[in-house]
Amino acid sequence: MIYDGKTIRDYIRKRDYGECAYCGDYDARFQVDHIKPLYEQKYKTTKKVDWSYWDERNLQTLCRKCHKEKTKEDVGRLAELKRNKKKVKIIEKKPLLCH
Image 1 (cartoon, rainbow, N blue to C red):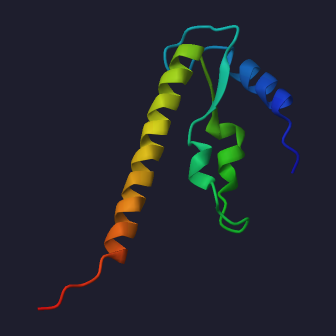
Image 2 (image 1 turned 60 degrees about the horizontal axis):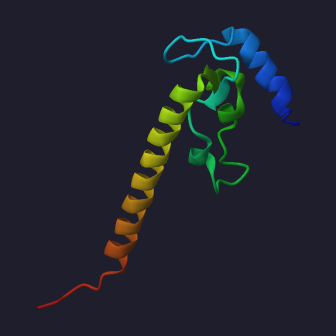
Image 3 (image 1 turned 180 degrees about the horizontal axis):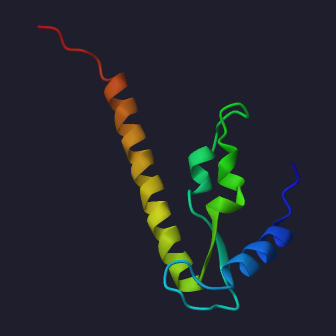
């Protein structure tokens, strides 16, 4: 599978008419965004990867402002996932106290 970013961006821009999927504004310097963020597939083996994350149906056009906001939200969710994962590891390593 060859991933040609320029061709995909051109296709998504034409498909969405360059309009932001969130606010509806037109932005000549639009951003193509993955609706389901790619970090959810990070570190998965080839057999476990959900390839739909790279499908055109997981892509949307966003204006720069909305893309910045969505990215901020995605990063916040990722940070929360990492914090929760660390808490689980700490709890798992905690020795049992027997009385």
